[in-house]
Image (tube, rainbow, N blue to C red):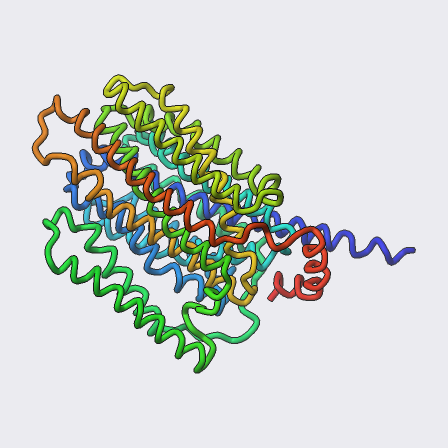
Length: 505
């Protein structure tokens, strides 16, 4: 009788530690998501204060996305090899330092360089978030955790513009746009200190080596694809840009061939190609990529439309997105907990159709109301779109990772984030075509609002087309979650001996 209560405090302490760890890594993920979108709202202020050219402004946003996408797979694999906690702490330290450099940048060139460094450090930090969750929580609890993750994604996507608007409007200590980066300093320092205490180390159970040749292939292929898209319009779409984008396909093919040989030779490829044999993973990766394209286009053109086209203040534009944020968070929590176990992939497909409906309402309103459109009139399409996005983001992450072995969690997490960021960067690059491509370089003041409204509607039609593709690709996802209640219990019992080592390795 006296010996039975003993394990309870230890179990309780372990349970508290993992939930503290979850809060820390979720905060870091939120910080990254905010930093992707917070800059968009401050673009006019940055341009006015620093004298940055349109090219430099584009690089302040796209440079982060490029560095992030190019280094994510490497960051995930480094976590598998050297420890996810170690890489997370390294990433959050570097991200905080890069944020300080952005905040104190003395020129546009320094700001661009600091943003690229910030993206590279985020690539060390962000893959560890899903890896730590995957290694720390048993399968039957991950749905709830990914529901929380989806809510964080929704909040981060829209809280970035809102926070950026508030910080820019307040002009704290006369720093204008700089606090949008400096706010990361206390959050990053707190995350570093608390992470050292509460996050338990985990890594791949077998010794792996970093595939440096694979790293070079990935970086070169991504840059060959994304750099011409980012600068194409500004440079007049030179021939070398098209050659580079086509050549990237050959480099990706060479990467796959090399990784296959690497896997058979020493079992330490940068990209675990065996993961693509898992249908749910392969289909989920395809959806993540195309979804990233849709979000990359929408969020930037939406900000440009409100601030430059309609002439709204950063605060007015930022607060307009609040209904979207609330809708995403509510729908994300509900989708994993209540809807997906019952309806399976139909929930994700309903999300895609709901987002399309929201976009069509937005197109109709932008056309009908023109320059007189008000924030309250945008609330309906934004809520509809937010519900649709919430139905996708949380269950999609769960579906992609559900059948991934723990030893490949970092690689899989890196791939998930990479393809989404690659899609995001592709979307940002396509803005040059679908948005700026329909705007004249020489507009009179009276022509700005109608020109930007037309470009906005044109861009939304592109987003609709991408979501139609996403809806079709979702048919390749499993009809229902493979892990039912009975399987979850069995898995929990089977994994019981290995759970604790996964937390303490």
